[in-house]
Image (tube, rainbow, N blue to C red; front, top):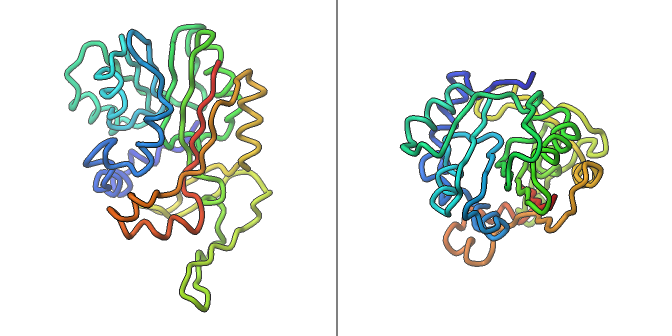
Length: 242
């Protein structure tokens, strides 16, 4: 079973105060890059894996999706998503992505935002999503970039010019990593970039786009504090086709 850190009071309070939690998709730095990869959703059956507060589910419906199933392990997340959604075509359910099984050929598009780095067995999940999608459909997701997930415990330092240095800790050693982020003892699963891509290929997906997100010049003009994101990729965006 996946760790359900989002239902701890300290973590949920911290997460709820984040910009992306308050502003939704528009508050997520990577959203413009993700949106470009989302296909035409008109009439599509959509599943959102790790749906959080339901921001993408509501976006999908506004883009014409016929139905959306939002899944999340957190009762706090699902309760908030239901409270913020008045649309009978959107269904939210509590589910552990580590053991989730979806009906075969039941969806036309699958999406996930920053959830799969909490999953130990991504290969199993990728194969399950592949079975749940109809041929020709798309799968778009983001995770924390594996370089971002593998810093040394001491964190970053600065060079003589004041630039941040991000030393890596056993990048080639895959497995669980425990970190203190919003709360102590958050467990994530580190996989090399190639491992994630090869698991998708082994599941039967064709890779259509891979992006190691970095802020654009306009992003930096609007948010100068994002300059540190140029030092190492924070997000990995993958678009695949069934």
